[in-house]
Length: 137
Image (cartoon, helix red, strand yellow):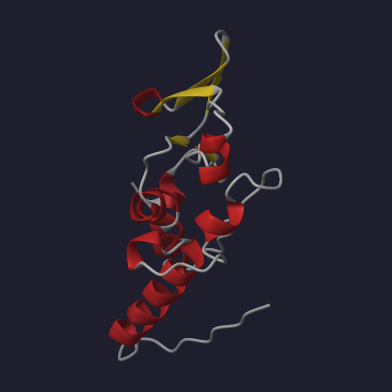
């Protein structure tokens, strides 16, 4: 569905990152249970929360991008403004998800490099029909 046809102009996605190697060595456990098909997480045994999108620790970067950002990019090409941002405590996976961390593998690319690539690819395909100005701040 198009981002502009949704009832709300804000969508909230939650990503549970996998444990880091250091956390595994320290025998840490993930304290959230994800139920992606119902977009819910359970904290501990009884605190249940629902979001617009829920991604479990094995979710792929490309799937997160396709679900959360591609509809925003579609809306931009329909003339709407769009923003995607990451919020969370230090070490929660914001840099990895957004793509500001160094990644050797294309599959690990985050949102920012993917959206920049797709934005300019779409501009290239449509430039014979339209004129574009891109501003970055």
